[in-house]
Image 1 (cartoon, rainbow, N blue to C red):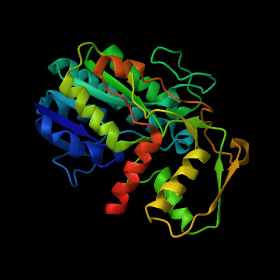
Image 2 (image 1 turned 90 degrees about the vertical axis):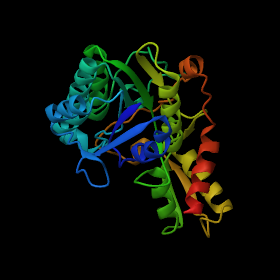
Image 3 (image 1 turned 60 degrees about the horizontal axis):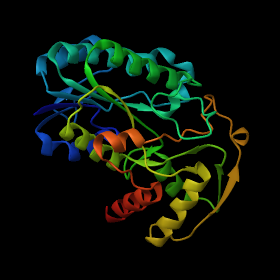
Length: 295
């Protein structure tokens, strides 16, 4: 099997470099081409399509995205180019060569007004440009005729890159008190597990194109996640001391982009179709911190 990995330097992309090689030949693409096999510039969708046709992979895994949620509010053109126009071009090329496209989307396609975990077929209503651009990408892929698996995930973090986990650990070493939003609820999900599941989905085969929710089990707030980070990191010796973690409201921490208050995703379909049982979010956190402590 030949696999083309787009976005090989991101949180999930770096983990996919580890999880995909057992499946076959992996061609890694990054925007600049540095630390990769080829360059893939997402500001040029036509060039991406040409690259897919030239390499003719069996599977394309698109781990590239515009993820600056707040900046997207004033940079909509760039967000849509990367999150919608580029996936549309990639999907069209995949349809032409009969390649499977695996693409990641987000909990931000929902407005967060739900009271139970969102299912794949629940109505979407993004609150901002980022979510709207990702939803447009989903729709373009579905309309392309390409075989596809769209994997919606949320609250992604890793032992590398830029993410909430590493920010909290850094701030814990600088401050005696942290103020963290407590009225946004979701499921923190490690990039390493996302990559492992992606490989398993490809290995299993996608009999029918569709959308699957791919998040850790359980739910918590950002405040609850921060408290757990402090507890687990301290227990592993990653923190010499534990700062106080105080809950605040979303209104206390205004941002340019509105975020969903409740964006827990239902994973019943993932379990049923692929036999994959997500780990509890706290177990995923513990494993990621153990990885971090070994670095």
